[in-house]
Amino acid sequence: MRKVVITLARQHCSGGLKVGKRLAEELGICCYDSEMFRLVSDDQAMHDNRVAHDARIKDTHLFDVAKETFDEHPDDELLEKDELLLMKNMFEYQSDIIRKLADQESCVIVGRCANHILKDREDTLSVFIHAPMDFRLRRASSIHNLPEKELELYVRNTDERRASYYHIYTGGNWLDTTNYELSLDASRFGIRGCAEMIQKYLKIRFPEE
Image (tube, rainbow, N blue to C red; front, side, top):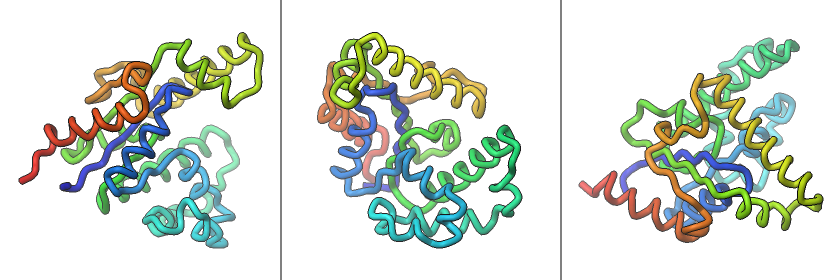
C-alpha cells in the first residue's frame, strides 16, 4: 500500500477509537490517539525521556517526532501559565507533531483536529464515525456506571467539548460532514464493518500505481 494517513474523528462511544485501532492493525500501521498525544505533551515526562519507555509509544515514531518538536518549542511556550495561551501553544505543538508523522509514515490519527491540520495533503483520507444516541448509550453503559440520564448527559457533554475544541482551533463545525471525505454509521456497519469499508474506499481513493 502506498503511503496514506487516515484521520479519524468520532462521536463519543460510537466505537471510533476501536475502528481506528482495528484499521491500523489490519493495515500494519500505527494508530495514534488522543491519550498518546497527551503523554507526549507532558513537559516533565518529555524532559526526563520517560515517555520513550511507555508501552504504547516506545515502538512507534511518536516519541522521536515529539522530542524533535519539543526541542523546537521554547520552554516558555509550553509552560505558559495563561490557560488560553497554554491551550493555543499545546495545539500548535501537537499540530507540528501530526504534520511530521504524516510526512514520515502511513498511520491512523484519531482526534486532535487532524482532518483540518492535514486538509491540504493529497495522501490523507478523513473519516468521521458516528452513531445514534441509543447505540452510543449502550456502549457507554458498559464502560461507565451511571444512571441513564446522567450517562446521556455525559455523552452529550463529551461531544460538546469535542465540538467546541474543533471550532476554537479550526473555526469549523465538527459535525459538518463536508469536513470529512467519508462518514460511517457504526451502528449499521459495526467496528469490523467500518474498518472494512475504509479499506475498500482506500483501494478506490489510492489505487496501486
